[in-house]
Length: 330
Image 1 (cartoon, rainbow, N blue to C red):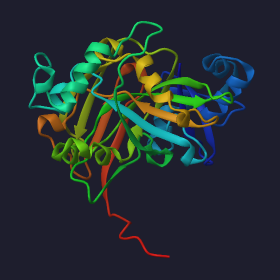
Image 2 (tube, one colour):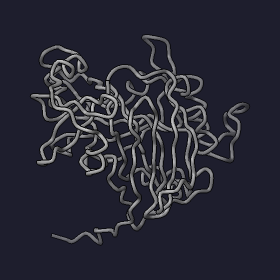
Image 3 (cartoon, rainbow, N blue to C red):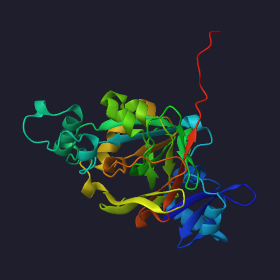
Image 4 (cartoon, one colour):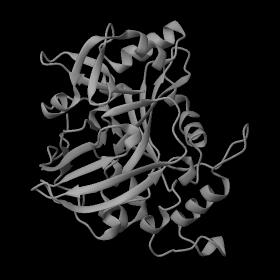
């Protein structure tokens, strides 16, 4: 099942079940958050409740998208209660783009860079047996709910940034239950969007490079994630022509870490188990236009799609001035 959040023509929020090229509106629940809260309260599955609440109203998906009324597939009314985070060096093809100087992870571990050591640790211990704890992944913070952008919305790049490049990824979408138990609603395609030039200057700048907006959706895939996900990532010029295109793969079959291991090492922190909070957690990528020497310019667009997640995620890159100048003493 694919769920889509959007606004109707009156500006009211709604959730719909994607059925081909149409959206069947869910009655009684205006947001994915409300639907998930109701499912937890009733002890029902999210897909089952969505199916039972799907009403008679049907809308054309393309019309909603063209009108700019799509929303991120999960959010929180208070943006401060939505964490956007992620993990890196989790995909079996990501080593070349993250550290071009090291093409192999074999041999003496002390001769490897820190990023290659981390990658090798994941290969060796990122998929533990049931009941065991695997190695920790690289982890980063992107922001709160204010950094989420729906399909069709621009991705603003601050004027102090050195680069604004796409990262086609899968994200897990979670809601913390009243008992502090994380509940996974499902998954969405995403553009994690980072400043790769800043990161390249020094790997300790990774945290700075990740404090950016991100694209998410348009649909929430309810249920388990297929072991193999295939998709395509594109950069389109200002005239809508394909400037760069490459296939990408994800899913556990193509990862050095299991989803369960990535989830454990995120939610093991009590900070991330506060009832009512939303978490958007990116699982990493192996495909970047930046690795092929592409520098995306303002006015150009990103397009990321995979049939598993329905319609493509589309966002235009926008350069914005920095609002902050200095701290004033009080």
